[in-house]
Length: 231
Image (cartoon, rainbow, N blue to C red; front, side):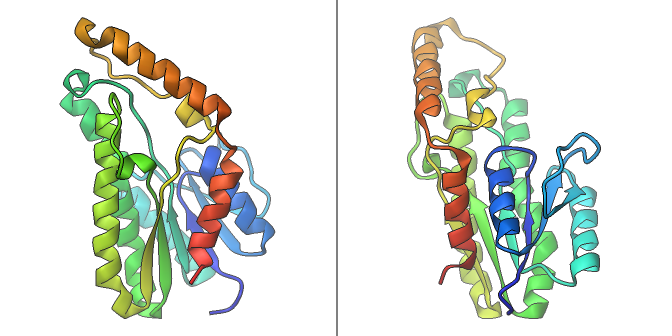
């Protein structure tokens, strides 16, 4: 492969995804970034925005076809789009859990499955899945988010074993607290059980405090770039 790669990053509207896209574009790579609403998204210099919803099969397939049609290939996929949720497991409804998994787990699955036929055909590629420290270290009141990231970890490690014979590798990046709007404005489970109230509020304040002191998204973005092109 040449030094200039075709990179597709999901969720570049803000935070880690946007910082990663900016760094890769500055390095001269051909970068495509997904946003849910292209008309409302802020432009990114050197990055072509593609409208896509990771929760929608047809939307994902269309976006990948657009990229392949324009660039001819996809060398790196960064599965960054994701959501979070704060609440006790007992407080979290099945519908809320399903919505979280639809983005964090099935979004990764949909996008990977759409890109993989092209990577297998070219006998090269890399998928970088953005997980979390909670993907291996659960925390109270983040149970469903942690469960979704545990799922991403298992999916990624299995996929890496299945794909390496095609010249395709799968890599995990596991950020800790990062100063992003996603972490600062984490939604909470709608149902509130009073028995959990004091401790849940304490955890919520601790998270907010940690996020305020956390490094900027550029730090994680640099790690993602390294994971995308490292040995």
